Length: 475
Ligand code: BG6
Image 1: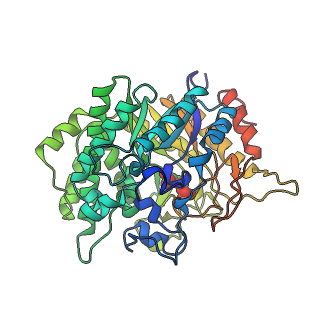
Image 2: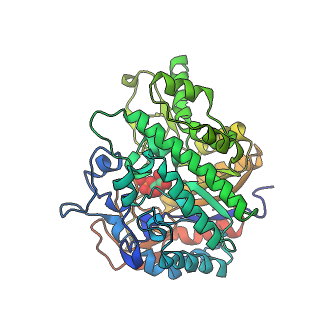
Image 3: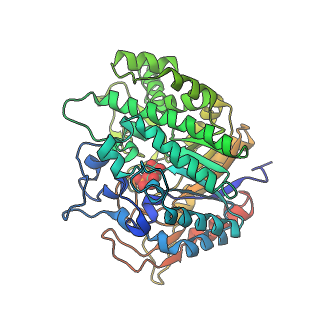
């Protein structure tokens, strides 16, 4: 009983939140580089405020990240010491294609990732590669308008063909888009979209969604053509939505809220648009332009597994005045009075992970992968400089227990678990460094100052023991 023998334990990062080296070895600029920390971040990531160039009044944390670009050997060595079986990371598109629409790739970018994969293999760590984790080359945004333009599908296909070919021998697990449902909540960060005055924003977002869905299916097709051993997954920001009460109006609101996210995965798993989405988009005048060949590709190239992030559950009230609101992974929802909250106001709900796992499995009956989960918290070193992060250990322990119940008692099929940010990195939502998730501390502050020195926290040995006992020893 317990977790399967080959369960993939590990951690997950994203290029833009850790690499840095934004202008090194031919890398081009990307949307994620231009998301500043501070009060304007939200306006920029949601596409309300145009930020196409760096300016002197803002600090851009992704420029240097935690300098994984120069520290990857040291960092992967630490992951290996924790016993990682898998390392989920992403490729910065503009390292491989600086503008995005070139024919030929940038060799130096390809070599960088090749070295990372080799380093992983050295320790028997399986790479799980997200093809795009929010990033889109700025040139594609300026020239084509980002994912609102279907030309992006071809550029993305080119990227896929190049990386699937080059890394054929060393990478088998791929994710097409990180949190594909983020297009709806953070359209600039998620899909390189900035809105023009007076345009139908919903239509733009759903057009971008359609283009990404087609691109994702095209990626599955190419992956299979190149290597039948490739396994390609979809990925979304999950977390079941509870009705605020048993009032049927609240129940209906909760169901509809969940459908906003499931809609993407319904297409990627079932190979066609669900009726509820077509009806809703039709009513709201935001149906995307869909070509007949799109329907074919969507139908024929569905994914091999469903991956998702889980930080918190959500709660929906039909009447917004009925409850207070709560923050969460880029979604605001009604405040659930039964839960406790993190320092950033995110609900903490381990049981919600079991519920979410069961819901997703009931819906898709397909192997799942939890590719992000964790607690963002401020870490204060004690008098010896050591970080006793029991709060993080408690959060993870309870979530791993809930995941174990879902596997052991409910029989869901789960391929693995990668904790978010095994090493401290830049927060996607806030751009802060002090919102830390890691088992490894990085000496860096919110202004980009620090020695970048890496240090193990208390949770480092704890997670090591979780992995070595295959999830049996959680004390
Ligand atoms: C997910 C993203 O939204 O949540 C990550 O895939 C992100 O990129 C993570 O970092 C946690 O969110 P935050 O805002 O705390 O960094």
